[in-house]
Image 1 (spheres, rainbow, N blue to C red):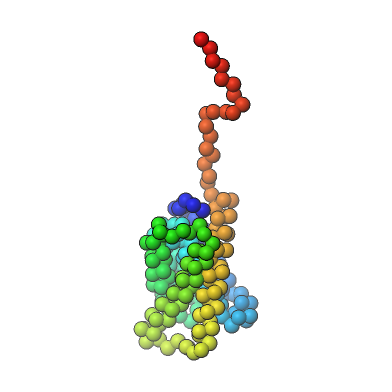
Image 2: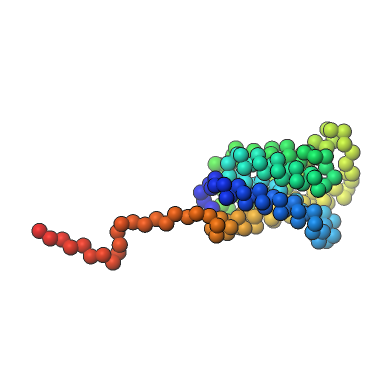
Length: 187
């Protein structure tokens, strides 16, 4: 998707995807039972939003997605907003230097975002005198979340590209020249 799209449709689709992702994370327990951890899809969406949308969409996704995620988890309300926004802002500020059309770049950005968001959230929980359950199992959960987020990020880009192609407006470029037209030259 070479061109940065800043349309309202793209922003609405990102926020709707965040709502659906949080709902699926809370209701679908298959991955949690299989691997012992749930994959968080909000960092993947934040990578996509940071590379393809404006900063208002990044801020809206951080606030809306973080509040939805916190309302369905054991986190205090609002603790996920700042880590999501920090990762989104970091990627957004450097997006002109990022080759975001490459699969490897998307994978690595998803890996970075999926590793940083839980780590920053845990840091915020510890600084606010909360007592999260931390043990050796937490390291496994963090690795599963990081790997799952890295794998989900290129999929997120592919799904949004298909949705933008299907629903987005694409102007038709027409020229006045028709190749089947004959040009008569006279005196």
